Image (cartoon, rainbow, N blue to C red; front, side, top):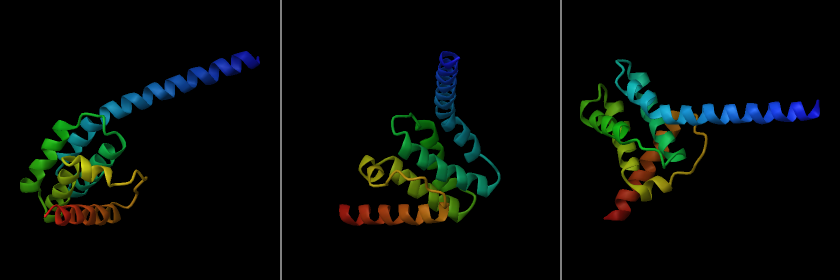
Length: 128
């Protein structure tokens, strides 16, 4: 009975891990879809989560996602979207800047973007 329980736990753990890997694989495509939404809140949320994704999974290829966010700098529906897209693009395209952002479970998007704005500002001022 104990052996059966251990086997069940191992199988369950493997299934959860496989599902997590698939979710990570699909995340950029989901964010890409959200970036094209007509709803500004959905777009801003996708920008926020795209950068969080890059922070936590730097090895993942997000080139298509990066291109779409870069388009939003000029084509974003609101000034807020354009500004947030600019900040995120700066971070995604600068490995040094990206590593300055601590891996935390950021929940408040506004506080997160304030932090990112400060990091980008400090980096750009230090570069001159």
